Length: 234
Length: 234
DNA sequence: TATAATAAACGTAAATTATACATTAATCTT
DNA sequence: AAGATTAATGTATAATTTACGTTTATTATA
Image 1 (spheres, chains in turn cyan, red, purple, green):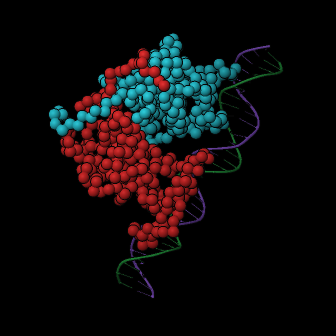
Image 2: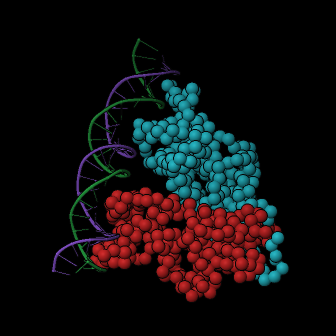
Image 3: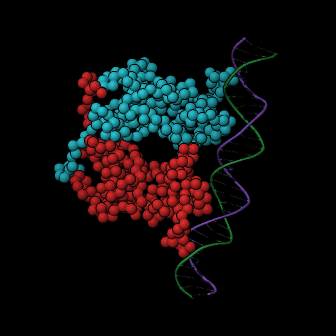
């Protein structure tokens, strides 16, 4: 047992700890961001990320998962810490440190009613309005992060349906990198990574011919990782 | 002006926010970690990272710089946020969220007297003792971070003296990657990056012939970055 | 002052990976 | 049956990475 009876420095500086979620989706060839219009003061009516104070008995990560579930109905979503926003003057109300966490969700999975109820809306990332506090900075930081990370970790698949086609995957990477890719080289590259399972089904929504559907083979990926494998899509 | 008079949700959940510094150095071919033996309760006598509570009127980053200066006398040190350690039960005393920040310092620059005064010691990273709380995890996370980051950002130079030789740089990378590198290929690679300035001096401490000293050309590096340049040492 | 010892510096050939680029295939609509 | 449309594929060239051995500069010492 730890002894707290003596010499314990108890500082006076307790502060609010919050978490803000930068929620991305992918639809119609574009990256989207889920934000909402505040319905309470202060900053009523302003666009904001979705966040919450962290409760005393709750992990920071749990807090973010809680918020995400409240707004989208989704659990077990890919979410990762972005960084801490800890400037003393970042919130004009009171001292509050916020931990930004970005989430990647499959845009067809979320609970549309719930999202609407909370006043949340998807915005194309090229058209994000002014957000409260340092939230625009958070969005820029999160974008920079996924642009780098998508290159060497298979996080892109979190934004696609379970079953996706190679052209869909290519369009996603084109949206992330903001750059056109050569379809022959792209296909060669992703297939050479050996983590895609080709299914016997086709998606015919975008062409008469239809494109074969694939699944990401996470088990295989984890195995390969152990033997010094490097995922990379550039 | 923001209106805080109405509808403002003021939570009860204020908590302590701390920062812990994972301080790395490089000496005699090995990566070193600066830790100290606690001189106050709780956990008196246990090895710990160097940290502090964040003050109400202080940025989180400032707090880390303050701590680092207190212990090493150094200012303007390379330091970067690692991640937040925010589990509700991570500190048995009271709810405390800690933001880990890793620092890279030139091991000959620090104030040895000051370090000694604080009970701090350098440990080879292969021989880090048990640390308090989740500090060992922080060290592992920081190591993983610099191993990845050194590959694509020139952070390694922060651990070397201003003037260094190519063999020294190679030994550093070998220590970071835990792997021997081919000296001919290494030299070719780093010189091809065009960010080293060859000086007219030699370092003769490790060989009769002496090795030419180089400096990292940060100005050049920043310029190159703007035109889509990729630093990479693998 | 010649020789030995030692780490630094350098180049090339082979293998791998990335890039550029055009045609054929499958299927639906009319 | 023809036309329209996206999916799928291959190859040659360029660029990069890897593997590997010899010469050079210098000091110590014989």
